Length: 372
Image (cartoon, rainbow, N blue to C red; front, side):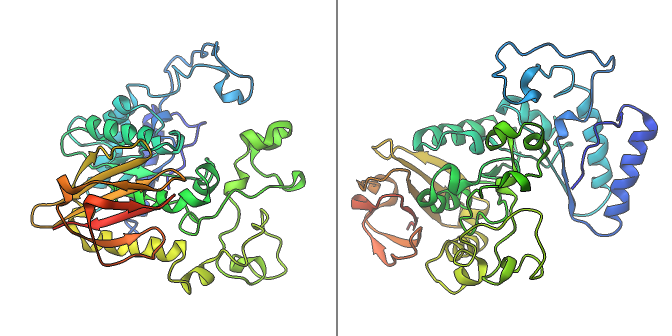
């Protein structure tokens, strides 16, 4: 994790050299790579000009009160990133992920014209995309279409700055979200606790820690990020196994930690964690899922996001995700034939052969079918 220091001027040769030496320090000790904080903000305007006011600012987050034309996505930042990448390339099997919030066309430039910048510019668009099947499908298709040749995609559904998936999309859809994350083409990134279905935790005013919420307590529920940073829920012991009993953690525990934790879900073959592990194992084992092609499908209803993953000689899978609270009977015989095998469902409650021509999807259900 490389934390960009805003007070440092990365145009300064001495500062830049110190950054490269820091990378080498950790690479020499065997780290696999770096997640670089706010990669697209590392170079500021050389003249340090004031940024213009944002005429559309809603008066909430002060960061949005100006247009960041002199501090974000400066063209010179790519030179710095290429220098960082050159350091990594001097070592075997190392990689760099960059935190970047930009639209597809600009995000794609951070792979580098010669694939010589970030291995994976973080793709955060699903975090802010409305949880609607066709909206999500369009976002996935658009991102896939924007990727440079041979660029490797990646997907993120949650992080330390955003609401948790189960709070954003609803607990029932959290399973669908995890199934999608682990079956799309590209590297998936999971924020801790999403594999359990952890939700945002209300933070009492006296326990608020996040600076934006401390500075604006009257709108802490809007700008505060503490609700997604609460202790990991390992077991039902005091403090959920996160820290020693009798210790007051930095942030409060979720009220449901005794029933929603790793120990409880590990013992339940139908739990969210069991689903996550099953999907991870399937992805690891199947070339179609870990490196195969992606193609979205028309399902005949706006409630369903469906797609095929396939690899030459590595089989094919149909993934159908129901984003609604309605059941649907679907016809995928044109792509799946007369019979397919259930690989996994979000409820972990179906198995055996199935007729893709009359595929029943229950409300909030996702299904992975092995084709052929």
